[in-house]
Length: 455
Image 1 (cartoon, helix red, strand yellow):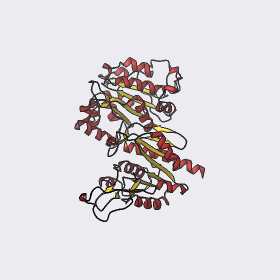
Image 2 (cartoon, rainbow, N blue to C red):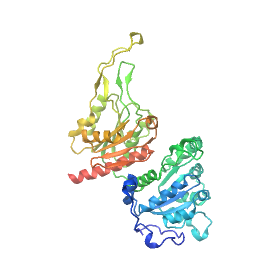
Image 3 (cartoon, rainbow, N blue to C red):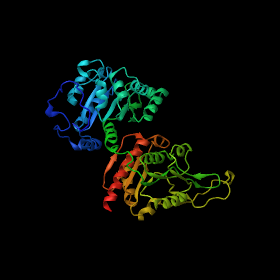
Image 4 (cartoon, helix red, strand yellow):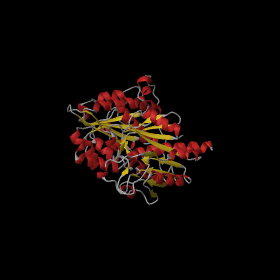
């Protein structure tokens, strides 16, 4: 047992022989050809971690069983709290066989729980995961209702919480559910999904629980990447860019793109929370974004690609890292009309010219960690790796916006893949942009550490 860790709660005698349970048990071999990348990574990253899995009343409870199996095979110690409605879909015996531990289900089972067993369970895990998390569970967690075992554990625990919603579309999109989700996020809960697909009703829509592999990746992100974040960038000068640029056609019109700036501002906010000295260089964005940054963040406002270039080149001379989240225009009109172009004059001929490539110009900045972004509509991996190589970047954050631009631009969510120089490719599940920001900064911390060792 870890030094200083709370004692394992007495949940009854393990059902499997002790030599086959615990983080050091021998696992059957896994065929890596059919194993998802996130699961392969988690086989070592989650080893020895304690995970309390709550399973509630949804047809997606069968995925909860698959998740319990995957977590156990990864080397994690898993204990399950099964709600009364969850037991109607998957039995307690199934989870006991998968995890090697008796399943908890009721506050009133003195044989299992003892006098304050819910408090022991609240302190025991490294994280509490609820998959599936029904609309009822989300409401109960948000309101702090504690008249069942899972609710009492959630209210008493101060461990990270990962929730995987599962419900019909109308229930998920209802203002009450969305308000409960906002409340839970504001308290630090990590919400994974839901996905769009076939639902229990037979209809297809938003509300399907994400796959166990995606939940595994989210757990890994919370437990592994989140370790030691407190002030791990203290005093580090970082430049972050955000938002679109605007390239004038005439005094009234301009060329731009759909970037909202939310990703970049999430990175700046997260970096400041971790102690970094942040310079934010922002294109035209909604005024609410700069307002949410702490006063310690210096905000520079620009409009055009040329202004962005000049501001970045100057700020980079004093920085250790640049996170280029801005969607800088690749082209601008070669000629800007002095007067407003009139419709009566007919459609104008727009001749475009390339703008400066800021990241390309920064190749000569020794010691500067450079992270770029790639929003692609096809060949995501190839395009990300091309950008990584051509601009000699340290990391590329890529996302596929083909047909899903409306779910990324202006949204509080993002689904990205991280590509680095070593050839590593890390696919993240759908997460809030703030959660993505912290994961990007986790990689930055690693890059800064490697850079210092090389010097």
